Length: 535
Image 1 (tube, rainbow, N blue to C red):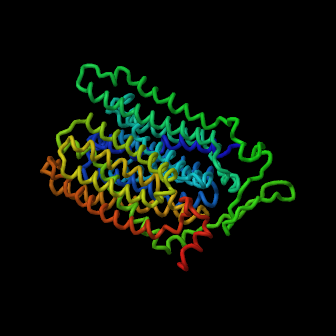
Image 2 (image 1 turned 90 degrees about the horizontal axis):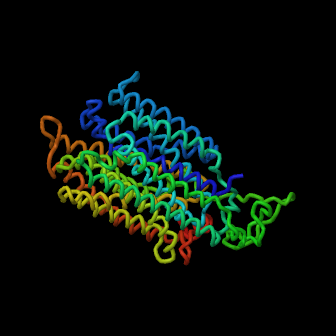
Image 3 (image 1 turned 45 degrees about the vertical axis):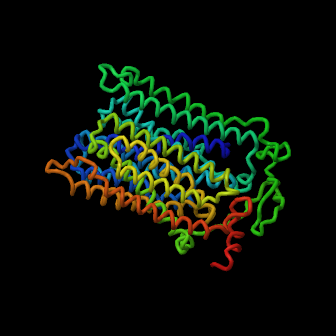
C-alpha cells in the first residue's frame, strides 16, 4: 500500500518531466524558422503554452472531488495528444500547422503539465501539513529544473537542430512517466499526515535535497562545458552526447532513498507502525487542544473532518486577491524572461550556445529558488513568516529585470539568474501559503484558480508588452537589434515588482494572525478566531 513517502518519490519523477513549458525558450527561434512564423505568431504559441499550464482550475476541482489518480490520468491524455499533434505540426505532417492550430496543440500539452504539477503539489500539501514548505520546495525544484533536463537532451541527443524529434520525445516520455507513477501517488489519512517527521525521515529529505543540488550542478556544468567547446570541429557535447544525458539517470535513481523505511520511523508512535496500530499520538482539534485520537468500534482510526475555506469563500477575501496580484506580477515577469531569452540574446549579438546556457541558468536558478525558499520558509518560520518570502521574491525579480533592462549581453547572465531565483522562490512559497491561509479542504480549486494570475501575467507582459515593443522597434525584416528591443519592457516589469514589494509588506502584517509564536500555521478554525472579528 503506497504511503506518503512513496507518493513523494512518484511526485519527484513526475515533476522532473512536467516542466516542459519552460523549455520553449530554447527551441523557439528554430521553431519560428521551421514554420516561417513571425515573432508575434511565435510569441502567441509560446504564451499559449504558458496559458495552458496555468489554467488548471478544472484540474484542481477534479482533484478535490475525484482524487489524484483519476485527475492525473486525464492530464496524461492531454500531454500525449498535445505533443503528438505539436510534433506532427512542426514537421508539417498531416495536421494543420498554422499559428492558431499550433497554439491549440501547445495549450493541450501545457494543460497536461499544469495537471501534473497541480496534483503532485496538492498531494504533498495534504500529506505533509506540518512540513509543507519543505516538501513543496523539494517537489517544485524538480519542476523548475525540468527545463534543464530537456535542454540537455535537446543539445545532447538531438544536437539542438531536430525540433520535431525533440517534441516527439516529449510525446513519449511525459505520458509514460505519468502512467508508471500513477498508482504510488496517493493521499493518506489526515491523522497519519499529522504525525511529525522522525529523525530518519528528516535525513531522507536532506539526502533528496542533495540529489537535486547535484542534478543542478551537473546540468549547469555540462551546459557551460559545451559552450566552451562550441565551434570546435567535434564538440565533446556531440561526441559524448548520449553519455552526458545518461549521466542524469544515477542521480534520479538516488531518489529511491525515500522508499527506505529505516529503523527510526516508528519511534514517535511507541514502537508500533502506523499501519498496524492506526493510532496517532497527537491531533490538534479546532480549539487547539491536544487530544488522543480515539479508535472506532473496529479499532480503526476514525477520520476527522477537514476544516477549510471553499473556493467561493477564498474569492471573497482581500487576502486571496493580494496573493493573486503578487503571482501575476512576479511570475509574469519570470515568464517574459524565459519566453524571450532567445530573442534577447540575438538582439544583443549572442549565439545559440549563449541562448542555451541562459535557458539552463534560468532553469537551475528556478530550481534553487524553489528549493531554498520553500525550505527556508519552514526552517526559519519562527523569525520570518512565510509571506516575507513572497516579498523577497518580488524584490529579487525587480533587481533581475533592472539588470536585464540596462545591461549589455554579459549582463544577461546575472539578470536571468536573479529572475530564475525569484520565479522559483515564489513557487516554493506560494502553494504552502495558500494552504496556511485557506487550509486544504478545497486546495486544488483554490490553487488552480490562483494560477490564472500566471496565465494573465504571461499574456500581458510577454505576448502583449514584450512582443508589441519588439515589433515596434524591429526593422523591415522583422528583427530588432540592440538594447532598446527589450529595455522598456523590463523597466516596466522592474517597477511593477517594486510596487508588489510594498504590497507584500502590507500583506505580511495582515496575515500575522495565521501563525503562532513558533511560526507554525494555526489550524483553520483557530486562525479564524484570531482574526479579531474579521468575517
